[in-house]
Length: 193
Image 1 (cartoon, helix red, strand yellow):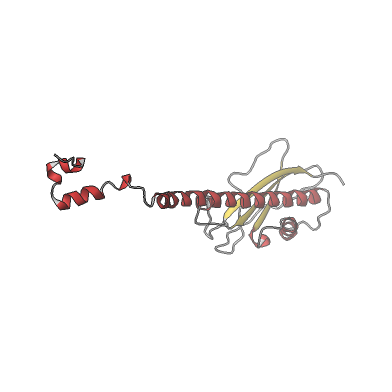
Image 2 (cartoon, helix red, strand yellow):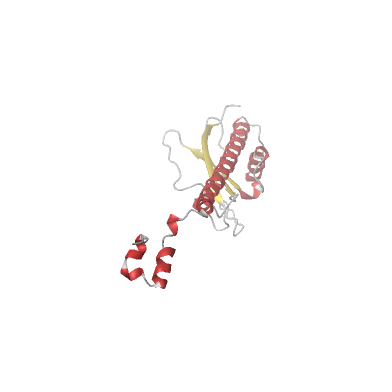
C-alpha cells in the first residue's frame, strides 16, 4: 500500500477541484516571496515613524526659534529699547530672530496684557491666532505697561506641517487654512528707566 499524503486520506478531498483549493489554502506553509511580504508590511510602518520624527524635529525647532525671538523682543521691550511699541514692531522684532519660519510676520500674533500683581487674573481660553483662511487678525490687547508693571505676553504663530498627510502631521489640530498654532507665553516686569 502506497503512502498517501494526509490531505488525500480524507474522502471529500479526492475530487480534483477540492484538492486544488486545499493546496491553495495552505499558502502560509510556502516560503517563496516571504521577504516581499515582510517588506510590504514593515516599510510603511518604518516610513511613518521616520516622517513623524522629522515632523517632530521641525516642529520643535520652530517652537524653539519662536520662543527665542519672543524672549529677545521682550528683553528689548522691558528695557525700553524697542520704540514705538506697536503690533508691527513686535512682529518684526520677533520674526527677525525666528529664521526658519517662512512668512512669519503674516502668521504671527502678539498679545500684551497688563496684570494686577495683587490680584492676578489670567485671560480665559487660548492665545488668539491669525486666521489665514479669511486673512483676518483678531483684536488683541496691547498694553506694554509702565515701570514696575507686570505684563503677560502671549504669542501665536500659525505654521504648516512638513508632511501633512502622514504620521504626526495627521494628528495635529488644524485651523481652517490647514496650519497649526505654535503658542508660547511669558510674564515680565517692566524695569525702571
